[in-house]
Structure formats: C-alpha cells, structure tokens
Length: 364
Image (cartoon, rainbow, N blue to C red; front, top):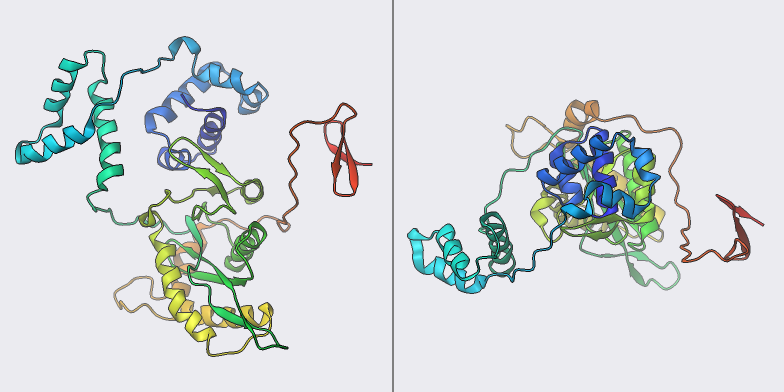
C-alpha cells in the first residue's frame, strides 16, 4: 500500500505523459504498482483535481480498499544461512530448492516471488551487488544533472587582511552533450542551490525534461524506496518550470555518472585555472569561472570519432533542439513558514506582521 503523496504523484506524472520507467524511478515503485494505481484511478471516474479535493485517507482507501489489504506476519527467513548454503552448492545453487525447504518448515511463509525479492534485498545490503552496470542511456535534451563539486578550494581573498576563504562550486551538465555550467557560492544552502539551478537554466536558454539533482538536503527532503519528498522551494521550482525532478538513486554514484565525471573534471580544469588568479569578490570569481567553463565547453573531445565533436557543438546540434523554451518571468525564492495550528482568531505571526487566514494569507 502506498501513501497519499505517492498515489497523487504517480497519477499526476502519468497524466502528463511521463513514461512508466521514469514514474517508477521518481516514486520508487514497481510497474505493477503504477498499473494498479492508474487502473483504480480510472475506475473512480474522477479528475485528478476532484481526487485531490478528498481527504488523504479517503484517497488511500479509494486506491487501496481496506478489505483488500493483507498484513504479512511471517518472519523473514534466515537469509544468512540460505546464502551460505547457496555458496556451498556452487554451480548447483538453486534458490527455488531452498525456498521449498523453507516452506516445509514455514507452510504459511512467503511465496516464491516475495522470497526471491527479500533474498535479493538482503544480499544487496550485506554483500553488495555484483558490480555489473549497464551503459548510460543518454537522450538529447532530456536530463540536466546537478551537483556540488566535492572540493572546497580557498579562492576568495580578503582585500584587507589577505586571508583566504573557502568557496563552493555548483555544477550542472546536460546528459548528452555534457555541456557544463558552473557557479561559485559562499555556501551550499537552499537559496544558493536554487539560484544555481535557475542561472544554469538561463545559461542553457532552454528547459530539459528532467532535473536530476544529487540527493542534497537543499532539494530533496526524503528519498528512499517508499517515498520521495522535495523541499518546498524545489517543489515550487518544479512547478514553475513545468519540469520533473528525478533524483539519482540514493548512495548510487552510477545513477549520475555524467555529473560525477563532470565534477571531477572541473576539480582539475576549473579549480587549477582559478588558482592562477587572485579574487577579492564572488563577482570576480564567477567572471573568471564563466571564461574557463566556456573554454572547456568549446574544447574538442579527445576521441576524434565522437560524433559530438565538442560540448558546444553537441549542445547546439543535439540537445537544444529537443529542449523546451524557458517560461516567461523569472523564478524567485520566498520564505516558507509552517504553522502546526492556526489560532481561533485566524491570525498567525510572521516576523513583525500578523497574517490573517481567510482562504489565503493577508497582512494586517
């Protein structure tokens, strides 16, 4: 059974034409769950807005009727012993055989499919995976990867004392062309992360289908197998640009190799070049950053057979034609204040003002 946010999120993305695969990645669910949610949603005969108007528990009950829910009380098998037995069996290892042995001792235990799944989860958590990986699928104009460079170099000079301060480097790259954008900030807090994202989109002059940030607290509040929660500011950004935020899987660098490689590349080619100068303001640092990154984007790839030729050529030839225009206006952040309860007089205190709640907040 999935919660209200996942149910509404799945329906919203599918109605927007987002593929099953990407819906599964966004909300951490299987294809059967997406099919079930969409099938029961269509059977209700409601629009998404009508469904949202109902209470959260009512929505969950509509998709997962209480009479259909079952709770599995069976204890998990001893997978450590099962795994040892699999290793001892060598080439004759057969998990279905061990499941039959398990069912002899636990007639009410897990069925074969769930047994396989729980064993795979146990093995991944305790033994790691087998290291196999598939080639990264890159679709022109589809994804913009977002991250912070791991190194925090001392590049900002105090003009009075000469003391050096550390700075933080925000970086994005497009999945196909690898065209990079970088910007220097004093910290990695949410306003900096939002500003970097907005400025990167403005620099590209177009919108990808997906934004793929690393699992940073500035953008992602929660990302696990059960739920994905964006920060309020990043959720508003997603709505403003009408894009889909699709974070990389948690603790899986291979889920975002493009930006990981780009960040490592910039640690050398950007930071080392910046170290050659002296900068007394963030503005000076960013002006130099623009020049250096522009040279990196224009530089031909080492592999002469690469059809992309260079980051700039690939961007103009492949990425940009597949991207959407930027919306009118400029996205700007605002302050967020959460109130657990609105007082009986409908007034809530916000800084030096009182706000009256009558369907919307008004300053009084």
